[in-house]
Amino acid sequence: MKMYIELYASLMPLLPPGKERFRREIKVDDGTTVQQLIEQYQITDEQAHIVLVNGHFVCSIDDRNHKILETDDTVSIWPPVAGG
Image 1 (cartoon, rainbow, N blue to C red):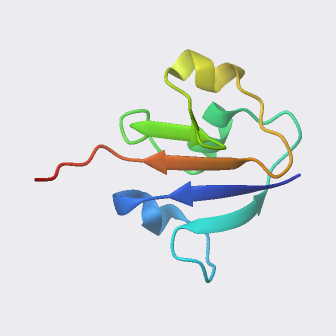
Image 2: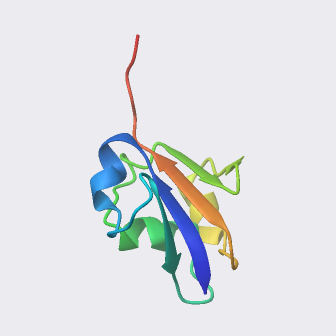
């Protein structure tokens, strides 16, 4: 099924080739969970500091293991960042 992944900051190099800066249309198998998608892109749990599905925060690894993705969903992932 078709969906979108957005990776930010230090995770951007993990994106597949494409023209958009931080967003890619991807295909995943039906029944794929958020956690399976994170693992597919070799993102560690520590790197997946903030995870949103369609703008809604998915707070725990347990939630990520149970949230099944649907067609046209957008998963956005941020690593821990510092700023000032």
